[in-house]
Length: 266
Image (cartoon, rainbow, N blue to C red):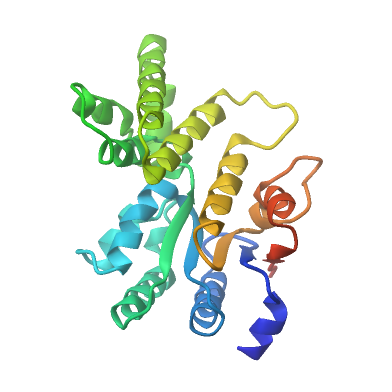
């Protein structure tokens, strides 16, 4: 605990980068660091490179919600990271910590559906706003399946069908923005960023995904006393990469000395 305290100082946001995804040693390091930070250094939230909308299921489960950890991790953590035994052990510890009287939160910070399907964010929005005719059909048309299947399904859509889906998503975002629900608004923002990524044609400035993640981490940091962010090194780095801002450099501008970034290699 003392060594960790010296490493993080008084930063309110600690970002741990992994040099590659799905490396068991990095997952174990993130788990060990989270436990020390929660138990001894006042961290109240774990923020992961995973869908924000899907993360709502994880947070519910670690606070006593129903289900088995294998199913919850698979459904609630995107990019296939929930298949990791290490991640499942971490979630189980968070649930046990909360059951014993603690209160650690889980947040995703990323686009829905592993960045290829907006369905989870649509579902989360519809669950939190007044229903309207056509909502079930909207959810059916926007839940495109798993990561690869969704990318293929979208690419193979006829132009008119694709335009109709996009228009329906924009209409849903407008509906949410007429409400006053912070979670639904963040899910709607993830849909906006998802659409912006589809339209991305290069040029200067950060990718829409990076902007959304930085905005989401900032939103979380305003609500939690101290947070641990876990993502790839590229996302958490404080400096721009080849002249382009990524999440970490955007956060460095916003949080300043309140952000401590720890990178890894192997």
